[in-house]
Length: 113
Length: 113
Image 1 (tube, chains in turn cyan, orange):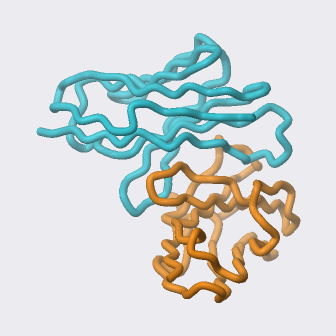
Image 2: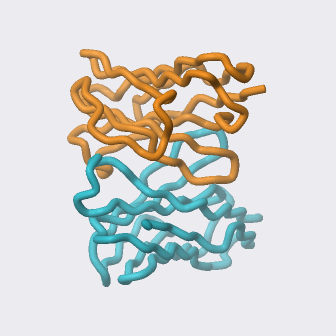
């Protein structure tokens, strides 16, 4: 069964304190792994897509990496505005509905000034 | 701003009632997906519509049904509401049926008493 597990569930950082969020996955044929940011009361906002092991993507203070079993979202020198829930999702190859994503439960990140 | 809008923003119903949630897609997007996000959980795929036809469904019972209209707006209908249906319902539209072009709306918060 396809599964996505995120850790930690919650993370509290001081401003400027770098850290990483983990997303481990089990899927029968990965088409893509997606990272989203979700603010309270809002829908998920797309950050990155990774397709193959070894791939890396960067955007401002965020960097996503992918291996055959997990992905990391590295946050360098975070600011309070980076506080949000970060969701990881996978899409299976040939899984029927093109947009069906399997989400993890997310990591709630709080960055204190 | 993503351009995907949902109505209403909040809704309270009682067990056994029926509810209709609405979604207006971003301009030019012909695919709509619906997700259910329970508190503290990641979104779960309900179904997807492409050009007015359902083309993929998650593990949800038949009392969850939908429609897509010629202007690509969409409805989610839930019959015989249960307490566990309380959740944030997210609509997402995409340009070409891929998650890479998918934008989420802000969601409708449904509370079933």
